[in-house]
Length: 262
Ligand SMILES: NS(=O)(=O)c1ccc(S(=O)(=O)NCc2cccs2)s1
Ligand SMILES: [Zn+2]
Image (cartoon, rainbow, N blue to C red; front, side, top):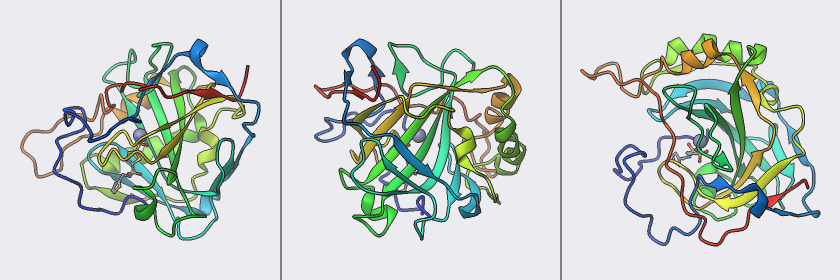
């Protein structure tokens, strides 16, 4: 699966930022300044086709919890939008805060949300493995969806109920038949897109970001369960709550953010 345990450089947890990424001129996340985004009429509708049968497991990797999909065939795919090629879903995960005031990685005109969903895909037209794609500039496509506190999200509850089983770093639990399309807003035609990077190590500048304009709602209690997870493994003396697992916003460095809507 896409998050095989490649040996990552011994950087500190991402929010004690490595000073600068050598030549980092397309880092993520960013603040999206709506009035500076450029409508691009050539942007196509996104084509999302997810097969719930490819869902395999949930893994606490010490940064977030990842719901991992079988990406050995083109069963769960993303294409269209700003993308030239077909991309395979390999995992989705979230970033969230210690309270409901902040937690998202991207912001819209400086507005932060309590959490942000990332659906991670890699370019299966050009590469044969996630690990190859993750170092290429057109290798990954990540859909970002903001979460707002409101009504309970029925589809999310199956995931919330499984989280206590992956409380500690490096714990894994089988998780199947979950359709990640239920986490997308009804309208996925309105989005911003820009060239960026992974927001955790290895921070590679390989990501075409697709940030949804519409958010989804989850309940206060559902998000509270995210905060019951731990950054630390069961053996560690000092347990640390998994909260504020977002990266600080990065400079735009002249990049253009395009919008699919006016
Ligand atoms: N927040 S985000 O969507 O920008 C992501 C950060 C890391 C992601 S990954 O786990 O898919 N790959 C990172 C790797 C792990 C091992 C080898 S590379 S996706
Ligand atoms: Zn992420």
